[in-house]
Image 1 (tube, rainbow, N blue to C red):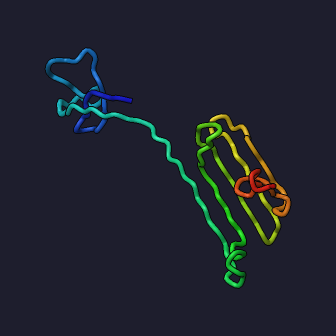
Image 2 (cartoon, rainbow, N blue to C red; image 1 turned 90 degrees about the horizontal axis):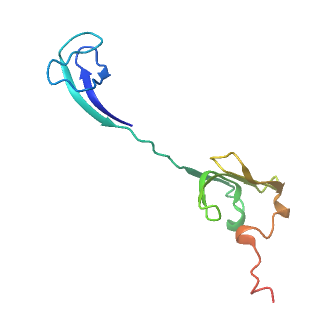
Image 3 (tube, rainbow, N blue to C red; image 1 turned 180 degrees about the horizontal axis):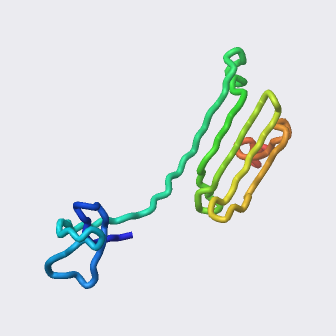
Length: 134
C-alpha cells in the first residue's frame, strides 16, 4: 500500500484531500491548520522458520546418543518448487517415526507417516543405492 497525504499535528490522524488544494489545508477532524505532508509505503513479507532440536543420552555410545529428534517449520520442496510445512518427530526409545508435509497455501497434506521407526526404511538418506546393490 502507498499513502501520500497529510498528518494532523493536533489529533495525529492521516488524511488525504483530492484534488490537492494549493493553500489552506485543514484537518477534517479537528479543523487545525497544523498539518504536515506525509508519505509511506506498506508491503508484506513472509517469514520462514525451521526449528530443529535433539534430546541426547550421554550414557549411550556416540552413534546412539540421540534419543529424540524434532524438525518443524518451513522447508523447501524441490519437487514442488515452493516452501512447505514440515513436522518430523523421531523417537528412538518409543520406536516411532512421524512426518507430516503440508502445503501452506492450500492446506493439502502432501505426506503423512506415523509408523514404527524400525519399519521406516528405504526413505531419504536410508535409500539403497542401486549401484551398490550388486
